[in-house]
Length: 115
Image (cartoon, rainbow, N blue to C red; front, side):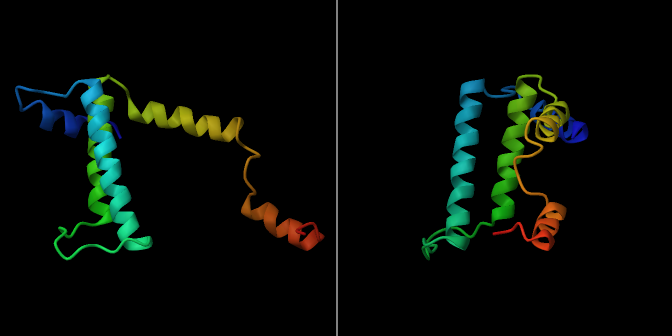
């Protein structure tokens, strides 16, 4: 993750304008999320793509969203690897019993507790 953040920073650092402001970055992130939602709706939802719409993929839109997310983190000097590790730790502790583990599901079925 650090290498990705460094790569994005090297790219952005080529330009005099640098990173956008946090509010502009949030707007860009929202815009990219909307484009991802539109593609997901075309592929898995009820809204077919118009013949005039540019062909895009979910992969492309996820890449755009990820790029802007990295820019946002970089602009605020946030280490995304540390941020992700903190979230994973939260899932491992606070939310450890929130979902049914696959191993437990099989055990419940064998014990007759899956009613």
